[in-house]
Length: 303
Length: 148
Image (tube, rainbow over all chains, first blue to last red; front, side):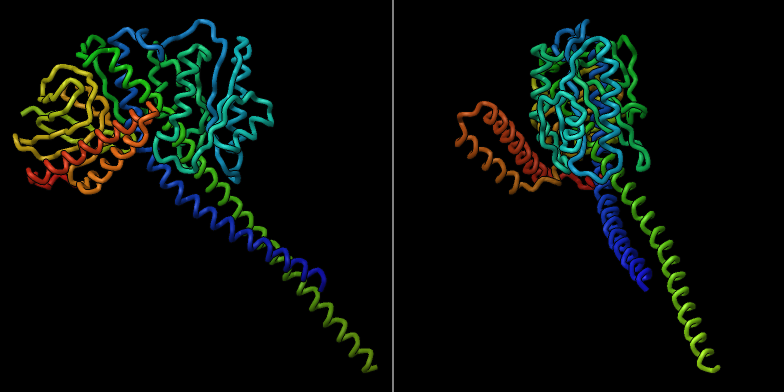
């Protein structure tokens, strides 16, 4: 009897875990839908702004703006790590940091120093554990509504880059490919690559939403002036690029969590089934033993 | 007749993506109207209105709070910081938001950055109010308002 009671207790405890994971799965699914919608609508803006910059870069001398300045020797790099505030999303943050570490080994060969700016507490903790040099930590909202909250980060990297403290600024985020697949990814924010790397503005693998091709020799009128267009437009572009990375990460986070929770629920169901079987067997064995005892007793009495 | 493909996008959404005959915008240097065959242009936009015309009739009015316009052959891309259709604007609330921003600006004269932000906000709200009023007066036909 002892055995069956223990099994029953375990079944109960797994059942309640199952309930929790199921609920979390559904919450994540709802959050994911929202986050995916947001990232999709921002992609159009980010792609189109990036294209405009490409058009501009073809026409005008990009050295006119500090955001395009490329140094020959890269001495110091800043990496913004966009992670999550909450756990229970599988290897999401670990994978991101591993990716960053791998990228660092490449940089370190050229003796470049790396500073880290973290956005999201899980990534910060993970980075600290691995001994990465964190210079700033910003609080990340669970759902980023607009780019206003990213202003301080943008300001910090802009100042760091323009003053020459950093020769390159990268952002490490998780690219949302689909519900099933999210990939950690590193993207260069600054300088804007003057050699017109078409992919820089986009997310690694995806074709831009709206491709607008123009011939090389097309001329532009710029109003009021190149300088002013750059000054008003480029900081905005930087902000949007960062916002998009954050939104991609959020969409990825929620899908990763949803998948993790779904797996957890499934394993819980499986365990419950197995335990129920064992429980029934134990119960049946108990009954059989009891009957055997009783009939043995009856047989003894009959003699 | 030749047409222009017009896209109005903000970081939050694609507000509009359709074929139009002409579009008027407020650039930093003044009002311009783009017709098919316009020369290529990249211009800074001031907070103001975007008026879209089909067959010579004004049919859609949009308030934007600054941004950039890129004119390419047969294509106009408006990269707006924020954009709203006139029908979507609640005039009373826009007016209230403007007043609130102005009061705040009176209180916080010290901080230059805050001041600039509030000034931009006031401009934005003023544009919204203006566009909402104009929309009422014109009584633009509302067939095209529904969001695609």
